[in-house]
Length: 195
Image 1: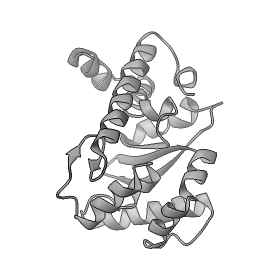
Image 2: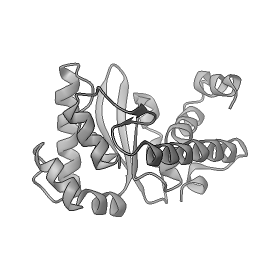
Image 3: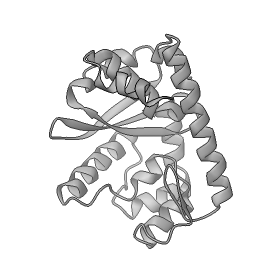
């Protein structure tokens, strides 16, 4: 995609159009069902468009935090995320960070709490967010153990195990992004794009 296209959408004054384009561009693998969830930072005023954007879809979202007119927004499909978070390996990892509950809404409240807690100390994101985003368990654990260093490669996340698998996943994410942007530019709504 050309830099002119990106510039046109991100500098556009139409908040609805800008919000839709940002969701299409940054959540493409999630919209196409390749990724379990997605998280993006949006202007606070654009968040007001999300309910309309995802009307009549299975997509839900939670605003995890807002600061300086920007919000961190987490997108998911309930049944898929619940299943993923309840996998025994994921449960064990999450329990180490205080996620003792089995209810998705309670887990998302805890995640929002952790995001605010960590960001208030300017430390980035809570490490366990990788589990919520569907990153391979080995990479989440590798990131935690190595404090974000000594990774084998970096793409959509830092890879600590099985780089060939990660390359294939990253390639599928890139292809999804290209496809979603083409569909969006052809006039499809997020509703039509989301699977």
